[in-house]
Image (cartoon, rainbow, N blue to C red; front, top):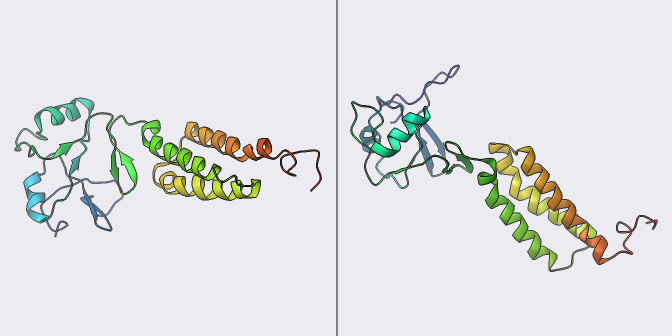
Length: 188
């Protein structure tokens, strides 16, 4: 229904069709051209659960859209109940974060907080070195894998996670210095 509409969406070099929607499970992301009428999209979609608009273009254009809610001089303003993301505001779409002037730290901060919290909970059980290794794989590997795939992991975040891994793993050495992995002089 959307593909057959008059919505222009975005033309991507090399792509056969214009980009109008991205569908995943029960989420739909719509990509409108500045000259598209939002009302046309609303008429197509009967249930519009959550709408986040991320203006795309020059900084001056984006600021103008946020302030005036108008994407083109010939178009009506966007309805007041729709959220238009500000500069520096990240919007989550299918597990990845999008927006204008967003930072890697902003995107990765919740993941780092979750890994720290989870590692702290697991540490209360006094895991062995082997247990810590498994916990690191499960917690840090599991909590970062998808976001790394869809967003990429900046070197600064990788460095911070490596420090967390080393700090967590080698706590066993402090807790149990006679453990073969905790004492370099012991032969296993």
